[in-house]
Length: 348
Image 1 (spheres, rainbow, N blue to C red):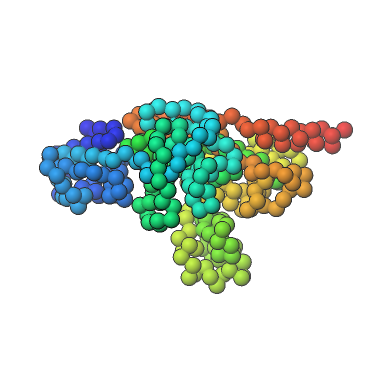
Image 2 (image 1 turned 60 degrees about the vertical axis):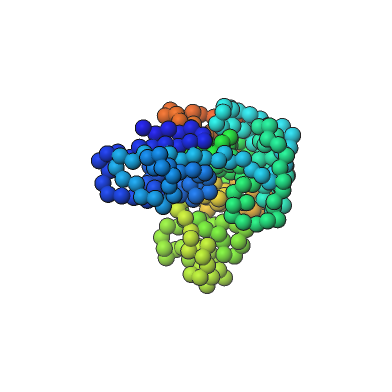
């Protein structure tokens, strides 16, 4: 029987388990286990049958593993009194309707005013020292307390955060294994080729512009061609290209307004800029996307029309799924109103 409650994790290995295994490898292999890197960074005490052990310790059938945790409380960020739209909150998680323009966690150029800064204040955490200039992997991890997934700065909507290390591990596993449902709405320029479809590609950094990502067909021969002649020479030697990952998005066209469309999409994988890159790949980029689209002549001042509408996920220790929704933001309503008015005008 497994116990999943901060700051303690416990599991007994079945008696019929054959052979021996490293403790960290066994725990990470469990359906609701803990990743080996997280075990290394977060465990404060490890016991096998009541005796202290290391992550490299060997376990066998019948052994009982107890792991004690240090809560994921950062030591490097200033809490800030920034209003938040809380959708749901309990002792383990906090679900927020993130405003457009808010960065998820501190990073270069945005060391304050982020969702993390706001959450620390909301949770009543004390002011903490800033370590942004002391680069190391451990410090980078600590500037993202509670963050298990992210939304781009200009993407609004549902985001779930963890309030302790156990909850963070639980939620991280849901995201890494895709045991959840993430649904977005967007307004795009143009219209996808089908009303219902799937975009299934590889995604990698664009060798011609490393600030962007690019989708290319699954067919290996077409992969190079999709980058263009000027970048093909760099593909074989570029480690980011070689590290391209599979990306899959389901979409449904809700409404068409002339040269624009309202689209709903579900992510089957979780790649950086996935929806924005896939819409660009289909030839109908998201309206207001300054990275993957040009300024729109009808809506030149439009901000990114992408919104995280729905998240279905299992909360820590629970078997059933919970659904969290974020209302359609005013910017969507304004653009759709203008599109409908324009369509009526043309119909007269």
